[in-house]
Length: 609
Image 1 (tube, rainbow, N blue to C red):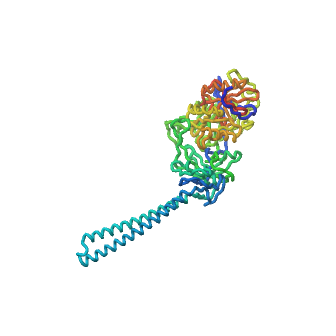
Image 2: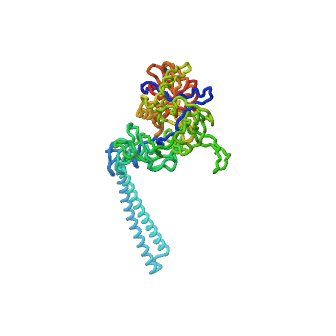
Image 3: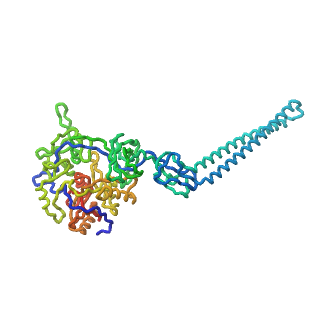
């Protein structure tokens, strides 16, 4: 057994195989095995999911404008305060002395101004007498004496003016000292709750001139209106509108979904370095969601996941997302439309008629979690190719196809996306033995019958498989890490790095907190995703051989992990997926191995080896 840290996830029964992928893709008769589905009406909900944090609509960080020791701190974290209530008192001794010094300086300046005015008046009288004597008899006062008297008066007048300005300066100094003294008392600027208290009585408060965190004393928040601030990717933000309804899940309240609405969509982007992507930058937009009925004991900075509903359709004609593909297509000429020899790539599906698949262009509307809305090109009851993903990518017109085991179109009991098989096929699959290469038969069961679901933490979504596989390796000491490919937008594939396979959403949220505490996540990154499906690529008779197989697979670039069974055997799994279609997609995009692969519902004990 490897010395790496093991993560116990839960112990329940056997795995459930949904579809056998990658085996017997063709028979000797030349037909291709595909998953067939019938086009039908479904209710669709288009959503955008983003993670973020709880924040009040208004909060004020209280910091000091002066330096001094805190001598009184009458509030504690969590206290409710009213506008004008005392929050912090700083030692005023130094500033009281400054006020006294400034007041004395003002008095001195006023006395000096009084003396200067007296000297000015005396110089004025002497000048007036000299001018009168000069006018009476020019021999009594010479011209030099008269000019000296004039100069003495002008100097005295200037000194008096300077003294008046010194009085004003001293008065301003006193006002400044009084304001500094007033800053030793900090009061609440609004009514609210003290949501953060960063200092204790006796500490020295300093201005936060160069660092906001250094000068922060406490935070007062108005919790009357609660918001969730999330960051939405640039490819999704264009689908959002003001007032869109939102379902918000807060990690601290795992069993409750809160309703809200979008109240602000940022006009400018926030560019951050994408994890594991070198110098690339992810372009996100800040979106504010206001909760309608937040819980009374809610706190700021709680982690939350918002599912923003951008559009809904009731009973819309729909197809699986995996069925939509792109082909070069030449429009057919008609009487109203002239012949056009230009070929262009169009979106469409393969429609099966009498066992032959033909590409047909379709117009799609909104995208639900697993289905696209069909606007034109198909009718209810049409049979289409709905998997596997790699087969659809390679399929060409006029290919003869057959339904692979587990196709919903074969089952009279199938409904929606739940695939079942007949009892005969199930028994035959169960009797098929596992050979030395790791291939096995299938025991099929609907996902709804699974004993437990699993939850994983999405830590990154990258555009390249190699970078995603490399990024996943750093989490091996924390929890099983794997890579899951998803289709986003128009056949764009993203590779999600998923960590953990936990039996509850709350435990997955705890794992997210651990990852954040260990520095693996920044800010509000990390979305908890329900992932009940995986690719089973083999079985080993015991945990020791299973651990060896896991190490070999990971050395080959396949992020596998082990699932222990009650009989002591070990299943080898790859991936953590929300739907069987996602698992089928990953069968074609993940690195190949000598093991056979099947889509399963996970239960049991998962361990990182």
